[in-house]
Amino acid sequence: MANPQLYSNYRLINNLLSKSIRQEFGSHITINLNPLKYFLNRTHYSYWVEGVEQVSLDIRQPVSLKELNHIENRLLSVLNMIFKCVELENFKEVKKVNVLIT
Image (cartoon, rainbow, N blue to C red):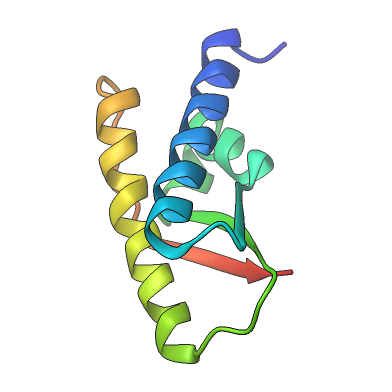
């Protein structure tokens, strides 16, 4: 069975990420950190080597490509800040965020 602390951290990180992005860009955006990628990155060394997380965006109104790029850059910054706070002992920098728009 997976580490319960890992699951609690995932829920906290996902919640903080969603709130910070929605606060900055509006409530028309829903964000979800991919749980499978998150858990694999923290339980299998070979997956984490690449330093990539995956985030799903559900956007309910049209946005420009410029704004999407800004959201992606902000996701990377916010994710690393949250990971530094929540996973202090095991922090590894995220170098890239794969964004899936649904």
